[in-house]
View 1 (spheres, rainbow, N blue to C red):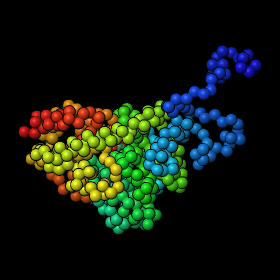
View 2: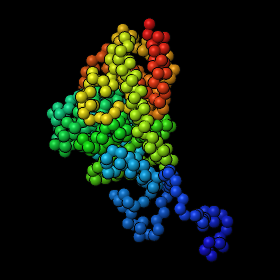
View 3: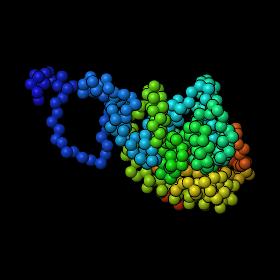
View 4: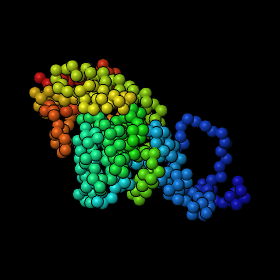
Length: 395
Ligand SMILES: *Cc1c(COP(=O)(O)O)cnc(C)c1O
């Protein structure tokens, strides 16, 4: 303790401790470094602080060593250079809109997009002067014909939420690059493990870390990942202006999930694929929408571009069952919970009315769609649960 420190009152010493911590401590976990205030060693350092420089610490909202550790690991998973963290996957989507587009710009959105993205785009079109148009997700290179001089951003989702069509991502990316249009993909489905969009020419990958990265169904977070210096600065500036930040305690939860993510993803994938094959042979089911099955739209693109599928797929019940019967089936399930936000250990099931969700592409099915998320339960028990619920509800 310095002389001036030892003469201070105990209360002051509690606020300004002179600690004697032995060096050399190591563990496998990333230390949780909480901060609002980041302390500068001197005024010159404070005055040099520049928001563009990722190697400077400035403010807890922007980064601490804990969030930076997560950012670097996520960039590595996707083969990107930069990651920014947002408090939810939807907030990451919003960060892309506010970072990349301005009033007067045109945005193309796939018709099977995660519906809060559709709502966000429609909101910006209604109240903030954006133009948004929805495109058929299977359009491929045909997207070129939709690009206008003011088109600034093309959203991609692979496969699309709920209906599982796998778009031709490289074809869309090539058409966009040729016209200087930014592409952003919602890559939550693959967790960045089974599909690497930046290697296929996409500019920004969006992740809902809420899902597989966390794996715990207990934390919300999102990320934008890019290899572009220019786009990183645009996203970072919007994030700063909007005051977007994440809790480092939440970061530590996501960091905890990352090492086991691949093993969990592969386990979800095995069970989901086995269940999808089994359901395909059931008389109650008219179609199984799983990208690894040959009749799923975009199956060829999936086989070309993806290395796995994870736990998510959908089925169409035979049209002889009413929507109310399918509701009763979902409610009769015991191991599949009713709820949003997949990626954890627990299986989920949710019915959707697809026809009411689309505007630009036609929907060929008449029966009711149920999306399954296959968790980490034993697959045979899940199968038995579905069979039992079918027996109760579909008579
Ligand atoms: C869950 C999800 C999101 C949003 O994630 P939140 O963290 O819940 O906001 C975005 N896109 C897709 C495809 C999702 O499944």
